Length: 139
Image (cartoon, rainbow, N blue to C red):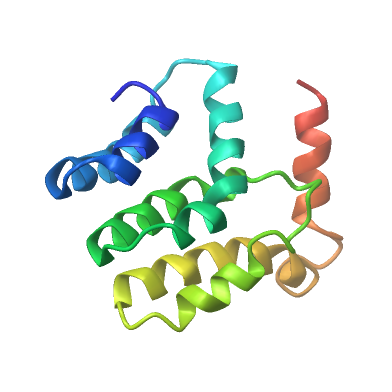
């Protein structure tokens, strides 16, 4: 598993053991030291397609592995698209009977709520997301 896209192909179509291994490999691929811009494009694509892809998954074990993998890469979502993209999906995940899925949803929601509390945690700062966007513009 050499790319994010390949990992998600296995998660969506592979058997249960390969699916589990692919969901664990997402973190390894993400934090590998290569500076491949394509990796970040694949991440954006997977995050944007996540709610649609999740709807098509019937097996609970596949749902668990899919949501765990998305929660690993979610912090890299596009700030320009806004938070509205996945919020309805998050609520669906929070209602799931499986605790692993609910916890993954909480992790992703925390990435969205963090910038809203910057003014409390760091007086004098407006928002972390603005700093992040300024940082990204420098590259």
